[in-house]
Length: 129
Image 1: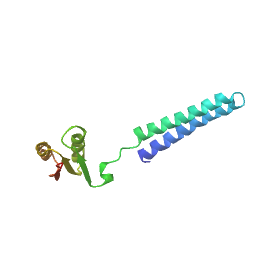
Image 2: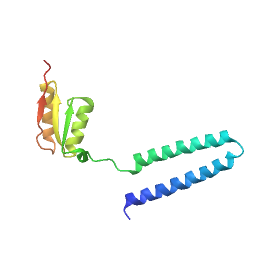
Image 3: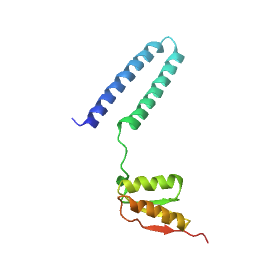
Image 4: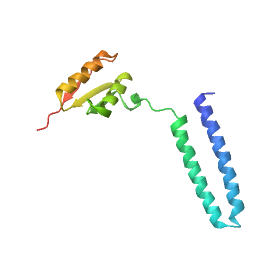
């Protein structure tokens, strides 16, 4: 069995068992105290959302950038987050179009990227009018 499918099956069974147990406890309290039952129901909903969030973050693999297309356009690619994105996307083998306002910084970024294993990248210099 595929490990991803196995993990999904185990997670689903554990979640169903946990929710079933809490739902049973809610039904037991429903006749005696409706507010306790409402609180437990809200607790079940919060637990379900937490488990689902953990599943999405820990079990599901991250999407590969290529699943969105062959090209990426990065603005502000010479500093900060934009530069980190360019480095990551180029390392993943994507075609990246670099857009910057300053040509000197853009040339520096191009020189850094050409040293790496990626192919030469096209770039665009934007000048405000």
